[in-house]
Amino acid sequence: MGKKDITLNEFLGDPHIFADLLNGCFFRGRQEIRPEELLPMDSVQGTENRIGKPGKRIRDTKKLFYRHRPAAVLAVENQENPDCRMPVRCMRYDADEYERQIKAIAAVHKEKTRLSRFGEEDRLIPVFTLVLYYGADEWDYPDRLHDLLEFGGAAQWLLDMVPDYPLRRLSVRKDLDIELFRTELREVMGILQRVD
Image (tube, rainbow, N blue to C red; front, side, top):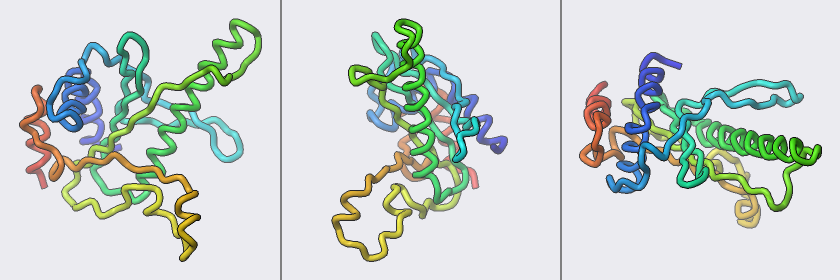
């Protein structure tokens, strides 16, 4: 993780800045997400490798969106350099978060009934990840899982059956209208739009 990335993570950790980013990017500046609805979450996510050995992944910025009850996990991944693996990386981050939720629900059941389980009545809260690309180069890399897969001329039915995973990526230089931001995020994104 580079120095710019760490600085941007700390900056976006402020709930006012985080809310401003999402409101400016997705709601044309309308204040749909309020800072007081964003609770901090640990950016370190537990995971397991192929042989079941525990490990961890570190997300850049992650918040719990709470409106009367937990409503969503919102995450931002800052990316200075294009990464063709990004759809898979985000899919894994999101899957790890869903797994964390399943384990937490199972632990509550175990406390109450001594049975660790995730039942048909249990529900997970949605996970949304935004990739905020602030690099100088054009992003000419896959924005969805299907763009990474080699179907080898297979029939359309195979393409239709394999689930896709779209990336929610915005380029600071091309996709952001900084006039929609209400906090000092406007100045920071303006600088990032001009830096080479």
